[in-house]
Length: 385
Image 1 (cartoon, helix red, strand yellow):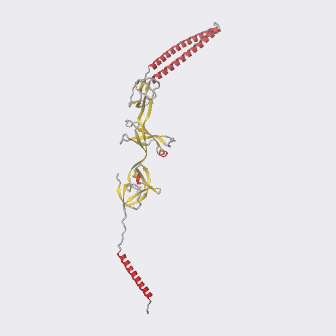
Image 2 (cartoon, one colour; image 1 turned 60 degrees about the horizontal axis):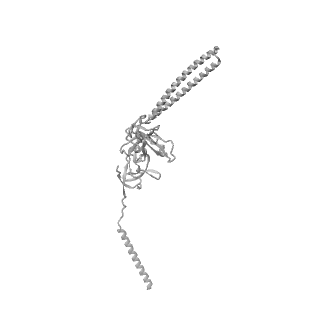
């Protein structure tokens, strides 16, 4: 049977296509068999700085700072004008209450006091004279009354004796009043004499002296005396801070001028009313200063100890952070990192007490702010203390 030319061409094309497909299939099979096998990459290990939860004591404290001032500071001024006759103290001298600091020239004052003494003497003599006259008037009145009752003296003479008696009483009363006035003037003169001596109203140290002998004091005080047996550190605290503290709490005080030295004081006062200008409560820390190591004007810092816990589980403050509303640490167990929820207690600003979630000896990331997913493989490097 004869075939047409077109049928021959179609048959040839089919043979060529089949040969090509068969060759392609053989090539693919060869390639697949030759491909090497692949293996999973090892997990990445992250180097982290770690700390170990330790047992120790922790203090919760409120820290304030400010300038030290004396317990009291008194400006001493003279009570009367005049020229300073003597200055008996200088800056830095210790003085006691009632000690003489300076004297005012009192020559005129003494003369006035002498005149007052003389006036009292005159008053006493006048009173004695008036009392003698009154005694005589009483006798004359009694004699005139007896004679009048016997009919030996007219009524006019009795009335005269009565008038003389009343006059003598009045003269005696006037002399007594004059003497009392003279006594008052003398007491005033004596007081002025005492005021010419300037004394210290408190025990302390002279911290300021403004005049020398021969000067006439003006607006400035003669001296300023400060009681430095105790020093004060005053500061303002917020409402929340004021609610946590109480009078009598221990305070550890340090001063910049004496590095390495510590002074122990106490919280002496808390203002019962808030300052409307800054919404702060004023507090007063007192520091004993018997050896005068602290000077007025030194800048100081006081840590008021609110409470103390011993045998507390402690980690650095930076090891704890907030996540999803919870306080957490990142705990290292072997080479694996996990997230642990913890409950905090006291903090001293550097370390924090862990009440639950960690035990002593557990290892955690030193800085919880470092974002490392839980389950990561880590290699801990102990933080330098």
